[in-house]
Every structure is written in C-alpha cells, then in structure tokens.
Length: 544
Image 1: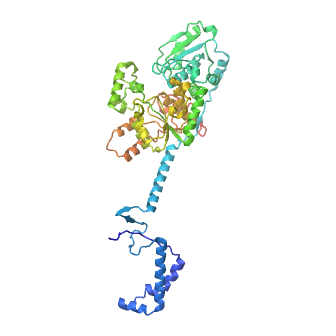
Image 2: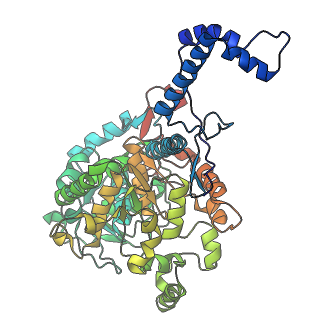
Image 3: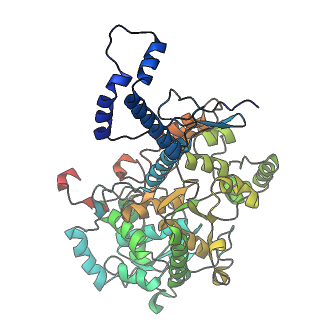
C-alpha cells in the first residue's frame, strides 16, 4: 500500500542561549572553513577517525530527533512543507483545513457577527434634544381664565376610525377647544364598521389622568352639565381640511357663544399641521402625556414587555397584512394568485373601502411606496440591515391574509417570533376579547417600549410611535424607504452582498435620528416633535 504523502510542518522553540554555544561548538563540523575540499567520502572517513566529534554529533542528532518525536509526533519519512505556518494532513485523500486555521476563521466570523449585532441594536444619537413644553407668558396668562371659566361653552366631538386615528382626532379636539375657549366633553368614540368595537373613552384611556394633565389648558367634563342637556347643539359635519385657528374662530365662535354647545364630527386631518408654537406644544402634551392608557392595558402591556425583554433586546414589527388593509390601499399581497384574486373580488364588492388613488395601478402604487411590505420584503430588509438571526421579534397587527403561511418567509429566517396571543398566559386576554381598540393599545405599548421598532407600512400607529419614541429620547425607529429601495428588490442581477450594501446605505438616515419638522412639509408635530416640543440645552436659542 502506498504511503500517504501527507505534509506536516513542525517547529522547535530553542532559546538563544543554547543555540549560540551549540553553533559555535559544531561550527567546525557543520560549517567547515572553505579550504581545499577533499572528496565527500574522504571527509566522512576523516570525521570517523575523530571519536570525540562523532560522539557529539550523534548526541546532537539523537536529542534533536527525540525532541521532535515527543513534542511534535515527528514522522522522519514526512517531508517538510514550504509553508511554515500551516500543518496539513490527509486521510483517505481528502484535504482538511488545520485546526488552528479553522479556529482563527471561526473567531473572525464570530467577531464580525458580534459587531453586526451590536450595530443593529445601537441607538441613534439624540444630540442633546429633550422634551421641552415651556409655554409662552401669553398662553399661561390665558390659562388662568381657563381655570376660572369655561362653564358656558362646551365642545362635543365624535371621533372615528381605529385606535390611532381616534387618538389623532382627540389631540386636535383638545386644541380646537383651546382655540374656542370652550370646555371639552369627553370625546365619543364612533363604532367602526370594520372592527365593531364599542369601547368608550374610559375603556381605553385613563380619564382621570387626562383631566388632570390638561387642567391648565382645557377643562374636561365627563358629560354635559344639566344646564345644557336640553340645548340643541350647533352641528358641523363638513369641516374643510387643514383649517387655521383663524378659520376656526371665524366659523364657530359666534354660534358657540350663542348656543353654548358645538358638535364636531370627522376631525381627521381637519386642523392645520402648522399652528402657532404654543398650540403645537399642546398637541404634544396631549399625545405624549395626557393620553395615557387605562390601568388594565398598562398592566398587561408591561407584563408582555417584560417577557419579551427577559432574554435581551427585542425588535417590534407592525405588520399591515390584514385583508382590509390590502383592500383599502389598492395593493395586493403578492403571495399567491388565489389571495390576490380574493382582494380583487372584495374591492369590487365593497368599493367604498378603497381609500387609495384609484387612477393608479397596483404596480404604480407599489413602486411609489404606497403599499405595505409583505413578509418576504420585510425579511430581506431586516437581513440587509444585519438583524441577527436570533433576534426576538414581537409582531403587532391583526390576522394576516393567508394566515400563518403569510408570515412563513419571515419566520423561516427569524424563528423567535411572538405576538400578544403567543406571549400571554391563559386567560390574560379574555377581558379584551373582540375589542380591537384595546388589543391595538396593548400592541402599541409593547412596540413603543421595544429596543428597535419597524413598521411595514406608514399610517397613524407608525407615525404616533415614531413621535413617541423621539419624545422619549430618540429610540431606534426604522422607517422603510420603500420608494427608493423597492426597484432593487425587483433586480435579479444584484448579488446579495450588493443588495445589502445598497439597502443599508438607503436607510443610514432613517434609523430614528433627530429630524426637524421644518424639513418635513405638512408633517404632524406628533411625528416630528423637533423643534416645537423638544429643545437642545447645548445650543443657543437662536440656533434652535
């Protein structure tokens, strides 16, 4: 049997104090002076006549061989390799990397993964910005009147939509009451035709806290006083979009002073996004301080948050993959032809649900960034941003169209996924059953408290959490740059490395860093609280 030609390199570490004497002692043997050289046979015979030299040479060779055999399992028939840092071996003809080389490679890979993981969880720099709701002297002076009066004029409002749409309208209702110098009756929550939730204000929010926080801004009453119960309110059903405080006063104040009660409906986006500084601060005060959830929601929300964080940081995703979302946005799930056809038929059957622009095709909407990301697109985005595979994910939202299969691309890459149903103990969700607004409030809490948050689509919840996390110190918030990145999702010529590099660069400035509302035309201060609601103590006032 042929001997295996396996190369192995061995080393001997010999201290210099032994090397120099030996080299000098055997210089005559190993490196004789270059004189007239007799033939090799004669040299060997000549050395053999010198017993002392032969004994020393044999002792040296035996010692050297013994050291090699004992320390390095030296094979005298195995030739030295020309690569001094590699030990190679072959068994059965298959070459394997050496143990030291494999260890170094594994160590480098681990360092890279740990670096990427640390980068994913790293929070953006807040640049010294902090909540700053200091109202002007004029506003504070007017607040003294609020505390004494506001018992003759009352504002009634009916708010509609889902939880976060209702929150936005409640914020504007408080501001309108302040503009009119009226007391606010606790807002009435209209039953939504999709979710059918009949919850009242006090079921979702802490009413006593709401009244207390706003005591210096607007008087809040649980109901109309007996003196006004028989009053026929002035009802306004069609307030134009984005009206100014001047418009509000000119349109409603005279009638309110005369009748004493004003009823407003459908306040969504009716009040201008650009208001005087004090009114913008009031918006933030309502959104981030006054509208605290009811104690039962806070209790369960804190429990779920604690369970998510029990093993380290976690990522929260707001996934908009419900059937009604695909119908309303004019988009398609893009998972199977059968599911796409379900959406087509539902849209034909209930055209009133379509809120997107009907003059655009699905493909045009998608490339314009107007469609929610599906599970596969969310997965590719997270991988491009170096989310670790062991990331703990809390996903918020309703049941996705297609059920568990719709989330399979995401779960395959990130198996450690939870929602409120999976995370809660038996019986904990019973009191919230069939109450969509209360369940959405629990999702909101766990998402707002996460280490990293990312929505699959814009919308009221995404914008409210964006502002809430900014107001809390700019916690990391990933806003998918859909319009710019989606063309690269459709490009099959890009390698994974190229795709990841491009996507990462597109999101370098979309990770929750401080952003000025002045740079976002027409944006709500509750999504971009700088500079009206947050200030930087390290900068002079003129620079803020």
